[in-house]
Length: 131
Image (tube, rainbow, N blue to C red):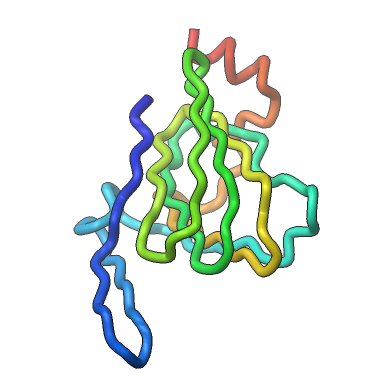
């Protein structure tokens, strides 16, 4: 699986820490879109899809959550809880997000503009496509 954790620069200061992310320097693609998930009710999950071409990096900018990635051959769970760490998710990787803590905020930086045609929303269709 080509997913990987990325650690971003941290500027530590007694007044509070600062982390920054620079396009194509820390992220392995040009960022076309940014969105964030928040106020996810307890017990709910997000994701449940894969992308044909889109790549993304997820960051828990507040709280924590789990990301379950599935390449069709291997499954791996990542717990995101550090605002200076992101998870790179390559295209053609099924993802599910769950176990959101209270107040969790998931920031997503993605390589493409929204395109419904880029999604696999049915797991069996995803598995057929990677065979």
